[in-house]
Image (tube, rainbow, N blue to C red; front, side, top):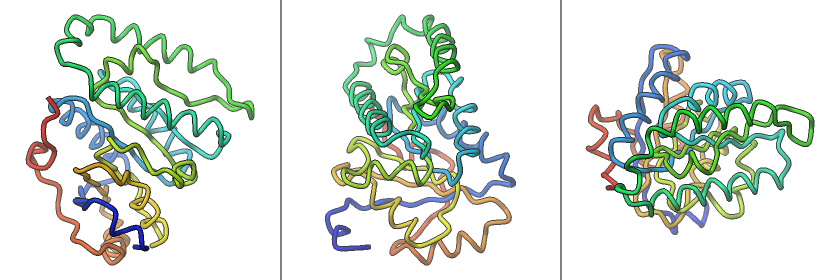
Length: 236
């Protein structure tokens, strides 16, 4: 990496082998549900195209106790900055939230999710496109999984500040195809978080591409442990 690498906290890198691109979606859902058992957490999921982003948002939004926000190149710079700020605020609030304060709130979750989806379905961005700004404050306050889905182009807004410091996990839903893309993704990881993990999803036909990613890294990329608690400590 560049001269900033000495300031970055160590990042533990793992990979998950999946049989097909379709299985990546269900594997991601399983991962998020498993992590919810440890308490609130922040996760960024990076993909390479808008189509992949749309599929991810569609799959992740209905998951209980999950708040989803997204960044993509069709949003203006101001809209992306605002989205990233809202995500960071929601995540910070969730990490400060006491577990007992969530008791009694589960009955309201499904209705809040429905209202959020209904409101988002009718929204449009400044370019007249459907605005995928999923995530409502009332839902986010009760969420355990705070997920930021972004394309590589959408992440440009974070180049000057990095991702939120409390973000502890990045999922590379699509493998970076070039070294500069890999370095940019890793360099955007918040510099103040003491615990950082990144997971690469690797399909059966991407072994060669994954070997190339391994050559980009200065450290090892290990297979993801079966038990999430082995690497991701409880936040409760």
